[in-house]
Length: 507
Image 1: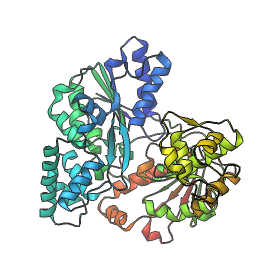
Image 2 (image 1 turned 180 degrees about the horizontal axis):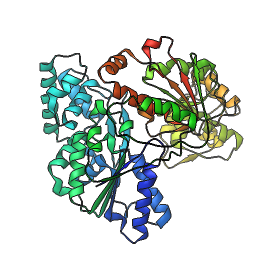
Image 3 (image 1 turned 135 degrees about the horizontal axis):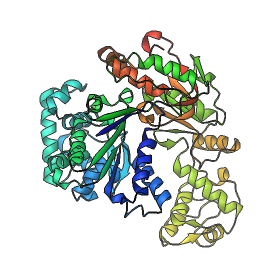
Image 4 (image 1 turned 120 degrees about the vertical axis):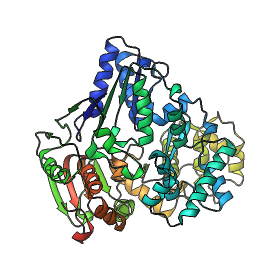
């Protein structure tokens, strides 16, 4: 096993992909290569690069470019119906009277099932118990739960019983079963494993089983960026792996001024693999402010980061009121159905022959009031009887489906769009914003932005009460989070300092 230690922006993934390219150039079949990434997006980007260069079939030729969860799903011969999802969790919650729903969860499509990263603390504790290989007592002790242990233990047993009765598995179950049945794993020539510092003991068990069945394995990661210990990630395991290693020493992201700040933070981490790495030649800039409202975003690319989501609420409100377009929690700041209704209407107005789908037409009708010369009574019912394959122009909607308002602008016609959404959409369009492009401003927690980067970064250095307590118990983890936040910067870093210096990171 060979390790690449990659400080921020030093090209960990590129290094692995270059080796994939070299193997394919020598004639190795892509199905003899395993490339396992932490996210589906990263795995598919690796696959797509190889497809583009070697003219291969992305579906047939790259069976093992995927996440470890997806590998388990594949190797165990599962279907989407076998996976516990939101519906199953709601059923379990109804049976027990304890809400374990995934409200606020991140949902990621992966091989026909949906990976659900729940924000529910009890569900997180269930996962930690298995991912850590240390059981429910350990998970309960390190997780701040408001229920007594006997109740947590009972819920865990009921959760396992519920899944067994209904023949369902959650995503951690997949990894558990694959770790217990290593014979189901593929026999590959070479394996690449990215972001290895984020693997849990359970995932490492699978990784070692893969290693035993292949000729060589390359892993890449950075212990200084290991910010998921609370979810069971075993940073020390990556550092202590036997075999050769190399430190990638040249960052292609970080300018000099940001590097100086980052280095001062990373040196505070007591338990780490020592590394020397160099910044880009550009100086970049680091500024400080006590008021985020003084930052001028313009039309530039920005990544706005905070330790906790609620810290971004005030700024999100200001960006909305000033007509800035941004992304938060994976979604653009203007609702999708509002964007689609405005776009469909404008396209039909600008080009009378422009055709829209039934889904688009229904969305338009949902934003128009019945009566008063807008929609004839029963127009929505008429439209619901149309064939899904039908296409509609504005004249077809007028002649056959009860549309009466046809010459109005979108803000006149779509009168059921709420006042706030209407004012916001108008402000965006008046600024010339393309509401169908990816917003240039992204608001995120530091954990949610790991792996990301931007020319300009606004970093809130405030800490929540919970984070302050965690810092006292484990300052290394707190400094890793700050380090990751700082090192998303490609050019200019703005540090939003806390009003109370005792409630923030010291920089």
